[in-house]
Amino acid sequence: MNTASDRVFFFDTTLRDGEQSPGCTMHHDEKVRFAHQLALLGVDIIEAGFPIASDGDFTSVQTIAREVGSSATAPRIAALARCKAGDIEAAARAVAPAVKNRIHVFIASSDLHLEVKLRITRQQALDQAGEMVALAKSHAEDVEFSAEDATRSDIDFLTQLVTVAIQAGATTINLPDTVGYSTPSEYQRLFETIRARVPGSDKAIFSTHCHDDLGLAVINTVSGLLGGARQMEVSMHGIGERAGNAALEEVAAILQVRRDAYPFHSGLDLKQIGATSKALDQIISFAPSPNKAIVGKNAFAHASGIHQHGMLANPKTYEIMTPGHFGVIANTIVLGKHSGRRALEHRLKELGYNLNKEEIDETYTRFTALADRKKSIYDQDILGLLPQTTL
Ligand code: KIV
Ligand code: ZN
Image (cartoon, rainbow, N blue to C red; front, top):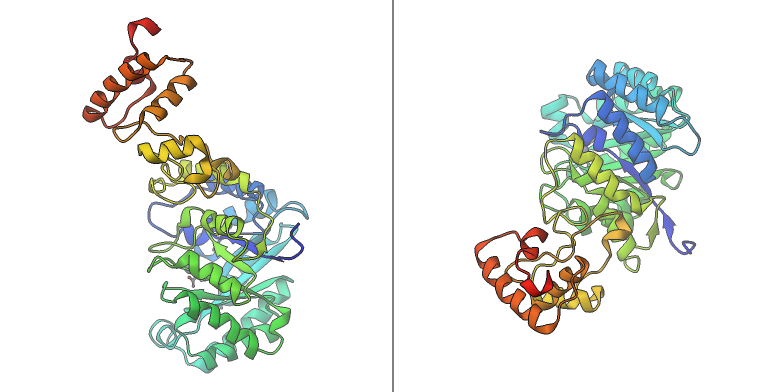
């Protein structure tokens, strides 16, 4: 069934970029539990942390590598490292217990970052990248190289940097939109240009990594696929630095619902999205906003009479996908002051009451009066509206 489409790889960074954001700090046990859930979801790579950052991060990555990465069918376990020998050695030790592991090495590529943050020249960045990717390669077969701030970098220099990384043994090349600045067409073109210019680029997998500062992280991610990327770095609920990363569940839904526009398939078990969202809810300090696509409380809720009528006649009238497909339990028909008679009748039937026309009319009149006064109508409220004859 999937033969006509290309396989793409989900790289989850909830435990690294996600955990770096305010309100998302996770304890050791929470990280390990969440990584087990990511394995059930079927992500290809779990970025488990940044081992040099703290002893706690090191231990969590190591435990995840040992417990979650314990078989050939488990996700690959990755750890982040700057272009520094100490970082790379710590990352290598932390991911070593996994059957499949990866060291993810990064250095900035924009002049702004090189001059102001790292205070090094372009030549020094090229030298460090070459040496440190080679060092990572001496510890792991699978090495990812990221050119931080790639989308604000000089294209000729970026071409040189990626060339050096591939020559030194990088097997995945990530071109992050670190500050969420790029547009979809620019991001697609970036992949096309770099892949066309860099010798040996056909041997590497290219990866997207998008931030949501302009609300473009998800569309930029799928645009990167159109430009030839085959790995996407995403996080559950889109948590991550500042406005966050591309939301895994939204990218997954686009690939499912709009296969015509984005002909790619992945190894995800979409039915696990609901459980993964719940697992994250229990760990971090905030839930996704109610109108958040796929996992928000209202993502599949219908409150207006016209929409409820359509939904009851045929869900396709107002839904392009079903919550069940994503393992999401949704209260699709929400009763309130915008609801119609049919929605009320439907709920009453679900509650076991088959009323005749007069009884429905009487209940509906009371219902609209109550809904004008009360924002949320619960099943108990509805039962309290039933005429005596029905009880
Ligand atoms: O946003 C970014 O550039 C990153 C890199 C470390 C991959 O998170
Ligand atoms: Zn990032």
